[in-house]
Length: 180
Image (cartoon, rainbow, N blue to C red; front, side):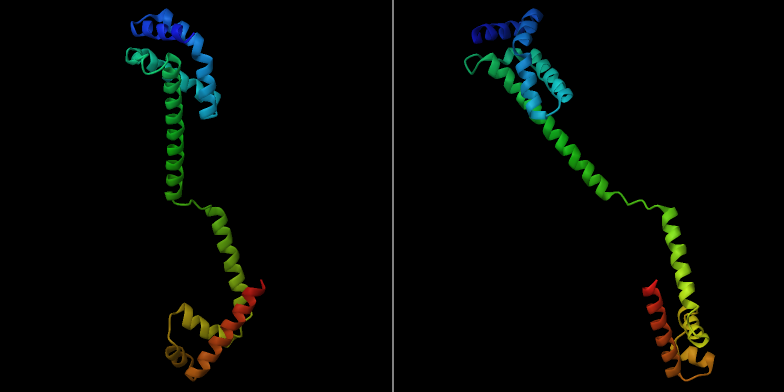
């Protein structure tokens, strides 16, 4: 059988389409089985076999029966094409992973704004638990950007008193925010 296949491949090199068809009928199923084992996909295996057999048609003149049989020569082409396909798919998958990792994460603006509104409500609720003096000192220091000394001057109190009001007010806010 090997001698017959070698002769068929030599006739394919001369451009004989009937010999090509006979050769494919003899080896096509084995080639498809090999390709399926390597690429693990029926459709992809069919593409591999098609590409490899196109290569067989184009390069049949390069076949040298002194170096091996027609079966080995063709099966090697199928195997190499299948391995190249798997490598290509792996490289493409890696590129996709890298690309996805580099893409900025898109946030859901609706949920983000809902969370912000909820946090704002929590802060307002906790600010309402402060005494008037604590609230006034914190407003001037944090929202008006004043220093302890400026707050003390604005409120006409000792700077140590301002620090105490702010410290006590922040502690109350921290406790309230943690409890919610």
